[in-house]
Amino acid sequence: MFDSGLGGLTVVRALGELLPAEDIVYLGDTARVPYGTRSAETVVRYARGCAALLLEHEVKALVIACNTVSAVAVELLRAELDLPVLGVVEPGAEAAVRAAEATGARRIGVLGTAGTVRSGAYPRAVGRLSTRFEVVAQPAPLLVPLVEEGWLEGDVPRLAVERYLAPLIEAEVGAIVLGCTHYPLLRPLIERAAEALAGRPIPVVDSAEATARQTEALLQERGLGQEPGHLGGLQVLVSDAPASFATSAERFLGYPVRELRQVDVVLG
Amino acid sequence: MFDSGLGGLTVVRALGELLPAEDIVYLGDTARVPYGTRSAETVVRYARGCAALLLEHEVKALVIACNTVSAVAVELLRAELDLPVLGVVEPGAEAAVRAAEATGARRIGVLGTAGTVRSGAYPRAVGRLSTRFEVVAQPAPLLVPLVEEGWLEGDVPRLAVERYLAPLIEAEVGAIVLGCTHYPLLRPLIERAAEALAGRPIPVVDSAEATARQTEALLQERGLGQEPGHLGGLQVLVSDAPASFATSAERFLGYPVRELRQVDVVLG
Image 1 (cartoon, rainbow over the protein chains, first blue to last red):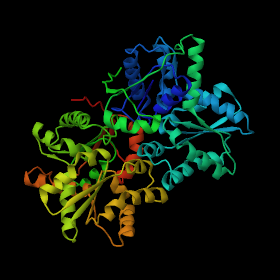
Image 2 (image 1 turned 180 degrees about the horizontal axis):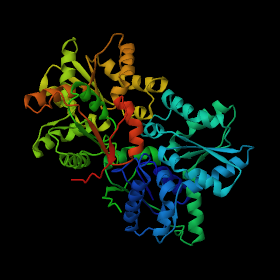
Image 3 (image 1 turned 45 degrees about the vertical axis):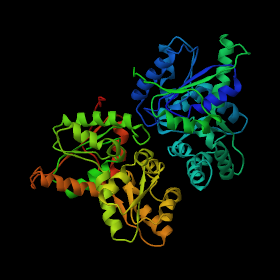
Image 4 (image 1 turned 180 degrees about the vertical axis):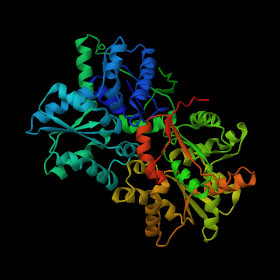
């Protein structure tokens, strides 16, 4: 599994809860974080470098735990690599369509980085699943720094979230996708703010959970699942600043990282 | 002149106002932005790459328009390069000492990125100028994304700024240094918030202005100044995403960028 930095750890957490027997090698490309503001061409180069490094660890499947990479490079990596590749956009879109179908809504809302929104990946993924929904995607660039600063409650994150949610509520969306792997840490606040603005609860879809469920299904389908008795481990690799990564990681994972080392990502 | 991204344009602006005859080549290393969260070793590699690229443009002096690089690499680049090298930390520290000397205070406050604060560059620079002042440095990681999002007024930036200023006001600082080249865009709000919290105005020092004045002094001293009749131009180079850089640049510069192209920074 790889991400530009810390955010993908929310996918590690969801996967660990669902599939505790699986061994996970997680790469955070902290030397090049954030990906969300980079051009598609640059993101593709970075993604190839991350994938090549993980293949050296003899992984059986690759999870792209980053919305920006999933938005621009999942098809390409699938074509180039000889193993199953999962992104976070498709599972998130699928869960959102299911949630919105249970309502009368014609629109699905997405919060994401500038790069993810610009890519149009969510409208495409939703469009492949259903012609009923229009996607309203809102760039929310302050949410990643708020999460990294640890400001998950209080006036500053609440007012920022309300400002980003307002156009989605205005558009009467039937579900809101957290289109960035950092956002699950703000989920309680986002749910409360959406309910306060709309006057009723709106389903909030966490693509980390949805991706963990699709990974489970894929491993079962291909007969790739670990033996149930095995106790899965987590190995974390980062391309820069391991000490500060270790400090922040616990907030995303819910437990401390035990195995962490610095590596060089060679760009493709 | 170079910076990790957009922020250094506040130094371009200040230099252009003071020295309109000088030609400026500005490099924003947008493929690797932000530097503020990277390790010192990584920042040094990036800085060497940026400097090498600018030397190809036959510059007569190099201004490091980035606090993070100034904090960790200015001495090194001075030793390695055969031309005058200016950072933003020393001019900012000098202006702050002058401003604080006019008050009875014993402390100077600094707002900066995590990397700049961790480096201890401001306490060192102030300590070389005066033994009277203790430096209280406050990391303010949300201010760069707030500026890049264009949220310069309103509740969200005001509450964030108040939270970062509180420990400085508590410490009764005699001046506050804007220790990041993005922050001058928030200067009016920071000045109002500081006055509201302290109950009296506190001098806010903009290192962009201070750096422009030191550059002027250095060029004069070395006889390197441009002929006064010349009309200076600005050439902007970026290592990624030129279109979005051009859109944001005007907010930092006060006028649109006319000459902008994408380049590859080769790391040293």
